[in-house]
Length: 288
Image (cartoon, rainbow, N blue to C red; front, side, top):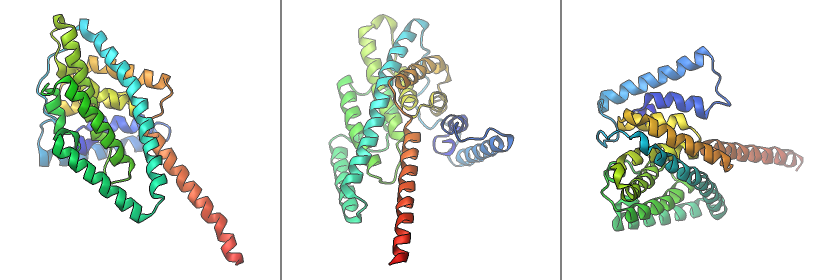
């Protein structure tokens, strides 16, 4: 996180939050994390400079009488997060059943997904790609609410297909883009419904970036700090806290499990099953 997103503090918090069951909080471990974060941040800034990785400009503060809207946004993401996690896991199972470890089927599947993403990129460029270039464009309000929701749904599909297929790549940046799209759509709709508040859709875009990550990964502190470091809009920390906390609490209430922890547990269980199968076959081979 520190090197990829120029977010050193978020990198530290991610280790503490995501690895809390396994991480040993002794002085040596903490110093090792701090040293790695410091060195990666220094190298990143030598080559890329001090500017925030996502340029959305300085957004206005969120007035106190509008904070309830951020709680509603958090509730929305609290529902979206567990659904998104469930879709990721089900899509992974679907692809696993399809290719069954066969290279030919895996290559065929990868070619089909690549072709689909290429066609979508020609039709609507915002529907393809990692999402970093899309975030500032969407946060600036350059799309209508309908188009934002269309791109959101399309990117959910492409993210599920690409990540769950096992192709190289992550889900972190696409998740931030999805949060931006839905947050901006909510902000633009709220601005129409409540014109007396003079709302800025970009503030909801920033809150949405952190909220989806908080609800999906179940790391609210990391989501808050990561987005603030990436966008350099620290004045939005209060609405960020409200949105991410609401999203996390509702996701937990609905029974959603942290995405990365669930994927890791499934991977380890699969490895243990494969190892157990090998151990069972070994005596049979020796007897024959």
